[in-house]
Structures are given as C-alpha cells and as structure tokens.
Length: 140
Image: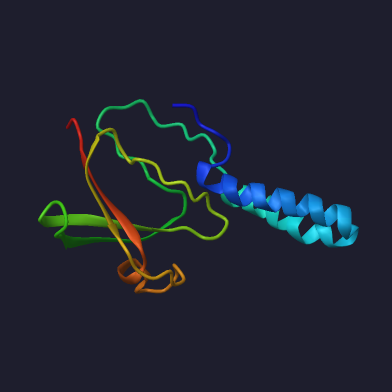
C-alpha cells in the first residue's frame, strides 16, 4: 500500500484552506497570512511520515506517536471478555495523528462508540470521548 506524506483525511481541509489563501491573497494581500498559516499548520497536523517497523517475529509496536500516560490491567468487555493490559497514549497537538496497526493481524471486531470531544488531557477523556475499538486476530 502506497503511503502519502499527508493523511487522506486532511486533504479536504487543505484544499479549502489553499483556495481561501489564494482568494485572500488576490483580494487582501496582507490578510492572506492567516489562512496560509492555517494551511501550513493543517498540513503539519495531518502529516504521515514513514515509520520503519523492526523485521522481527511476534512484535508489537506503538500504534501512535505521543507519550504513554498509563499502563494498567482492566477488564475488557467489548471483545475479549477478560482482563487485558490497557496502554493509554496521549497525543499533543504537535504529534503525528495517524494511528497504525500495532501488529500483524486480521481485523475481527470494530465498534464505533459515539461520545464527546473534550480535551484529551482530561482524566476522564478516554471514557467520555468518541472512539473506535478494534479487535485483531494475530498469527501468534
């Protein structure tokens, strides 16, 4: 699968901001700095850099850039129905916001859980924010 330097979800935002930047530049030269700055930041936010994965068997890698904020055991009731290790990763505004599969496997379960969009640094954000849950069947 070909990887692009910007995640596909970012292209609509970039297109609108590019047009807005050009129109603003034509009409109000000095005001074009605002949409152009937003265009550059949006491209930076949706960047999709290449990540080299070690060529090793039975390896799990971080699915996202950011900082691990907690590692805890908890009961997982949506897919496993048993205790599991939950690793929470906080992504700041400046981290790459592309999530990748942590290991080789087949997606066996997907559940979208609607919720709020509160600031990710709140303690309860993981429980009340919108999220997707995935279950992977791995070869090991």
